Length: 239
Image 1 (tube, rainbow, N blue to C red):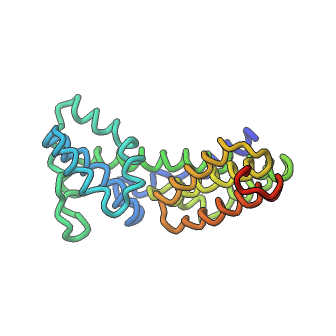
Image 2 (cartoon, helix red, strand yellow):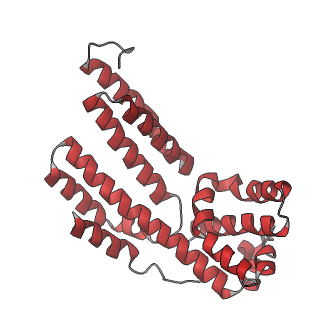
């Protein structure tokens, strides 16, 4: 397993530096900018109103990833404040949309974009490795370790997965939460542990928060509940 996870780390992380400080995709552009604009508003106006303004601007299109990538770029903000470059961050507030926010990208120092994009991509790489591990655990829970290793290996060498793993976006964290939900729900069906059922519901909810199309986890939750009821005495109340 350790070599499988190491391989996933190498393959998912290889080339994460490509095109930096230029964004790889529009998704990445939006996720990184959302987090930085939130901090820019707070640095400019360190009050409740400033926090509200920053969050309201950034969470509108992609609320779920804002909280994750805000933590990812936090070291960049702290370094800027500690080295007296707080004005650089504050200047990013309320960027003009013209030409895909080109003005704010051109006027902001290269190191801000380099480290921000780098941290966001590395965060995504970590999510990818955790997803591989969770899939291994899911396969093991469903059948045996060989099944888990095969499932994890197939995901590790999937081109689409590796491509998304090294770019900022919502797909990989959403997939991680979805697989976690499946793992917990299968455990609930097998053992009847309600804590696993509730945890699976939470993981599924977070997956939906990241990516709405993963609303398909809802019927899976219902199915898990019904299957557990069938395994007991058919009573929904005791499931």
